[in-house]
Length: 112
View (tube, one colour):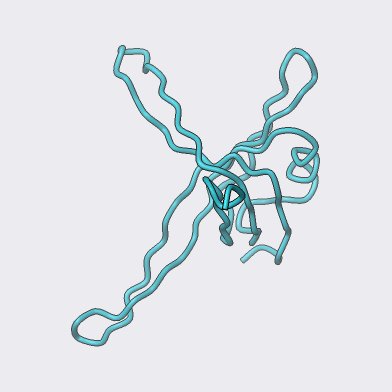
């Protein structure tokens, strides 16, 4: 059961072009938002669709795949784990952010 702890699998589309960050040591990180869709029927029987947005972070060798093959609107599948971090804005306000640190990525389709 340990393999089930903190595991996230999502299929969705990129909401923006991936941001590639290169560090001084040459390592890279990719960041992008990803939308997953859900739908249900309301009390009147009407279909209601909703999109959920997720912040994705990728490190290591997968960054090269993102940099060369992944674009805004493209459908992908990712697997990773939830991470949380906080930061302070320029005005001193503390903000909290939940991200998915992806360790696997699968290209599913083209752009919409």
